[in-house]
Image 1: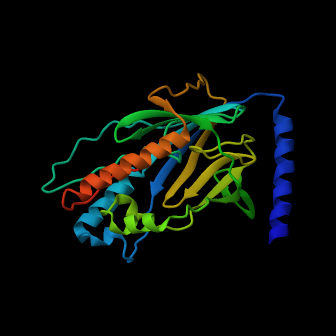
Image 2: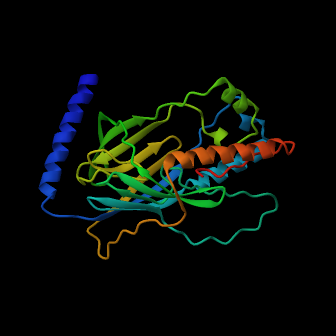
Image 3: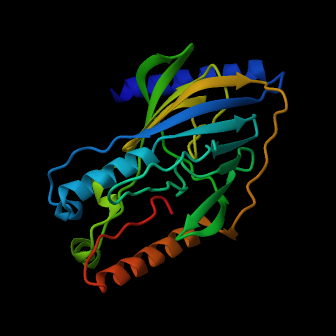
Length: 289
C-alpha cells in the first residue's frame, strides 16, 4: 500500500507539472462556488452534553446543523485567492412559543472565515472574532503533509483524486484532563474528541494549488473537503469571469496565529470560569471564535 501511494504521488506530481507547463502560457482566473453542511454523530457516551435535557440537546444540535449550512465562493488566480461566505438576507423570524437558539460559525482558520491567501509568499489574512471582538489574523501558511491515495471519482465533469491529512493530536496534561471533566457543558462537546482526519478531493483539470479556507498544497483545486462533521462541496466553477477582482480583508486588529490562539484559549477559559461560578447553566460558546 505504501509503494502504491508513492507511485500515485509521483504520477500526480508529474501530471501537475505538465498541466502547469501547458497553462503557464496563459494566466487564468476563476470563481468556485461551495456549499457546506454539518452532520453531528449521535453519541451515547458520557460527555458533558449528555447531562442536558433531551429537548435542550436536540435544540442545540439543530442550531449547530443550521449554522453549518452555508454558501461560499473562492476567487482564485495562480498567485492569490479570496474565500468568503455568501451573504444572505436575514429571513423573517417566525414566532415561537418557547425558547429558540441560533449559532454563528466564524473563522478559526478552517473553512468558515473570510480568508485571503498569497500563494507566492505563502501567507494568509483571515478575519476572525473572539467574543465579538474582530481580529485580522496574519501569518505564514502552514504546509500540510497530504497523503495522496489511490482513489478517484467524478464531481460534475471533473475527475478528482483523494488525499488525506491527519492533524497532530494535542496531548493534554493531567491538570487539563481534570479541568475537562469538571467544566460546564459546551457546544463543542457534541464533536467527538478523536483523531482529526481531513479528506480532500482535488482535480488536476484546474492546475491551481488551492481550496476552501486555509486548505491548499495539493496539485490541483480542491472540489470537496470533509473535515470532521463538516463537508464542503463545489457545485459550480466559472473560469475567467468578467469583472474579476480580489480584495484583501482589512477588518479587525492585526495579530499572528499563535497570539490569536493563545488569546482565544485565555478568553474561553475566563468565560468557563464565570459560568462555573454562577451556579450551573450551560456554557454556550461561539463556534470558531
